[in-house]
Length: 399
Image 1 (tube, rainbow, N blue to C red):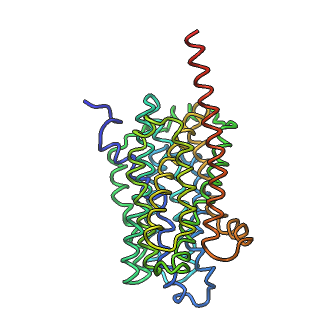
Image 2 (image 1 turned 180 degrees about the vertical axis):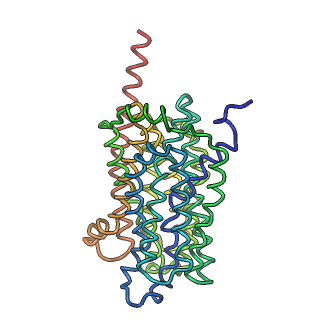
Image 3 (image 1 turned 90 degrees about the horizontal axis):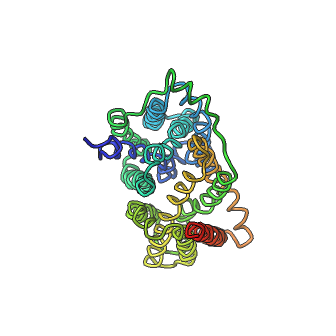
């Protein structure tokens, strides 16, 4: 009989929770309808419904380690999924702004409870097989992209019914809740197991901090592809807001086959995949910023999607190697907190930086391209350093 970790049902169930990591902001297409639904709330106030889940995710990430000690990993994931389901669907039948805002915060908190576990459980199960771990981390990135793409396309249809209907997408949590319950046999971390875990002090090192800082900037620079792309498409006469929704869905789909093939590419390219990924992201953003027709825009989505599909799984793979022993979950939590801080601060910081070039949406994307160019330079330096270390080790072994 196959080990549990080699069963397809286990892999699908373990990866299924990643479907919801990027689902919170996908209701953005409903915001224009909600402006009219809440006339007493400013437009920027209504837009916080798309960003406040990031606050919730950070809170959930901080609470998660404590819940894991009390409930265990599996129960923490299930609690997060239940909160995501209940809070996510609440706006379907709510009419007052404040309760909806609170539910959006709770949605983020629910996602935050299992956000780090969606990543850190993979190295726990596959720490004895580097290539299989890389493959699963690639699929983990794929699943979050699939979740974002499916929800984006569904919302595009549901908003034609009403803005309330857009929140139906959170019922997608139910299948994952069932699968994770049935097919992921995590050890109960009560009793002696919890006692052992609590005595194992988790720690971080300089490499974890470096990865966290890099991920902050990566997502701060990448997020304008979400909130500035619709404006750029309209400003440059490429299409309408509905066109923007379709392009956003397409850009998410592009990364799926790349993420699914990450294990293969990592096996062939090893650490070269790091600078190659960010070079492609840089080129993609530059091309997006200067796009004035649909062909160029879609081509830029393909290039940046491939690059992001290379770069982000590598970062999490690197984190698995860099984290001190028994500290992968803490390290992942720190990185994900920085990711969400980067996402939340992105509009403010990028708006400030792009103000030197003008108010056009394409200027913000150009600033992102410049930012990714600097990250690419670091990635090249990182590869050279790792390559020299590898060559040095090989020479020592021969001697």
